[in-house]
Image 1 (cartoon, rainbow, N blue to C red):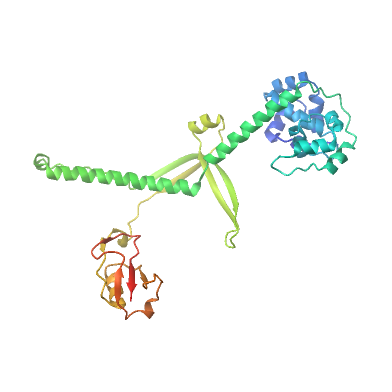
Image 2 (image 1 turned 90 degrees about the horizontal axis):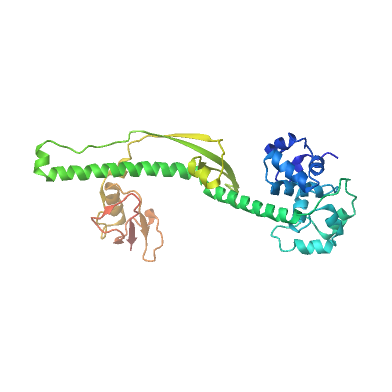
Length: 344
């Protein structure tokens, strides 16, 4: 039976392509080419892959000689310290189950499944040399753990694309604010200094009318599942800059990258964001009068409550009197302030 190299955990299309240059195109080809320690060393040198990884793949191929065995099952057996068909058949099935206990993920290898696999006659092959396999495997396991840790670190370094764009926008706004503030301070200093003012000197005002931004990045798509009816599948794009820091941190020579081009263009703010609005004195007015006073000042969002802080409907309390207001009369009302009028 021909089983492709994709049946071995850890061999991706790129690795399979390299192995093909050594005449290895199937799982049988893998176990035929890795029966001895010298075979595995030669293959590691020829392909450039570590001896630990070659050994890890070789053990899987060895166990896959058993019909019905999957790569996932083979990996579980390796984690239980079983590195060959001979060892597998010599082990008591209950003993293997005991070795697999305590693992976080659910095992596919039940006692019944193990006994079924142990009863299968494996495909013939030259004797598999197991000297040094254990140390090679544990070294490989450590390598795998480090690789997974690095991958997790890399994944955590990704940021939501929307957050990246928002932070860029905020950064530009803050930079413009700093420029404007600095210019105002200089202009104030000039106005207060007779000598400087007499020369006709004015502060220079720097403006960023448009900002173009180009980001070389790696990206990934993440799908989140929620319980809400409106958004069962939430797809998000996460990105990471492809720069020297990325390459040094993850020790990668990855060159594939995508480009994100953005243009930030200023637009006039809404008038309500630039007007200085002050809180009118509403206490003692009827609700109808107070609402009119608020709207005259440009305050269109407010709350009406009773003494128990319960929300009231405007149409029900128009003739009632305002007893208290949450913002003191004459105080500057900012764009996110919501005045509260207590009605009685």
